[in-house]
Image (cartoon, rainbow, N blue to C red; front, side):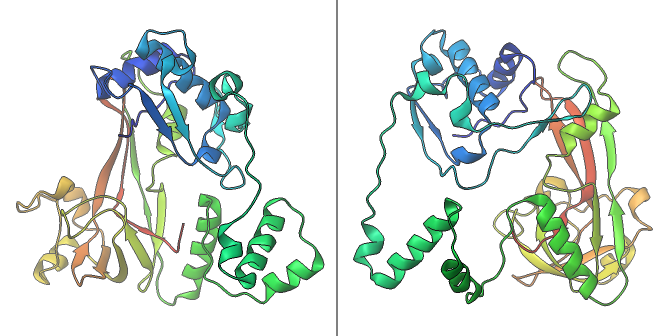
Length: 320
């Protein structure tokens, strides 16, 4: 089971309160905790999680006595730097193994250095494994570079800024008009009832999968970023922008307009959205949908709106 909460940058007590809104009985914090993709876990986050576990378990043992099962490759994606909510300055990230509580939680390391699988599957695969290991450790010689340059593959990008750069480059290659959609954003209150500042709102919303601004053209490949119709239009569904239409034009053409959370009733579109031309997306299953804005909300510990972004549900995407 996954615990998804926005962690407080100051106290573990506040974080424990948020966890209790998801897991009132503390049943999730029991016996075993499995942490995956360890390379992306910031050391400060690891320390905070360890402290929360001790609070939830009422124990002074590391992680409250929970058995840890941790997996991941430290040569993969690094931790994402956080920002200080007081001044919006970037906080340098540290790896999980640099956490203050790492040694007492993990014990002495055991290194497994002998490779079996690639050797059993032939010399060519073993050679490729050696090349990849050389790249992982930063020991790439001229011969390895020459081999890599002979390979051609689809490029998969791992960082959002790289994806945005590639998206904009590919979007510029498409002909036709570019339509830009800037999200509406709203600040709510935190769990203490205090009004969220503009800077705090921006920080909360910057981690949403849907961006503040989206630029689209006819022919752009897009991906649905929220579940709309169970089993039919779900998060991750791919499609192509075929046109831009108003709500009235979409209704006249019998194009699907889906209400938030997949409500099958006749959609009630706010008047403020009726005059704008929204992207018409044809998904790989053949369904065409008018991508009107959707609410994307960050909630506080009391499950109330802390920050909200209203943006079209289909984001231009090449690959992540």
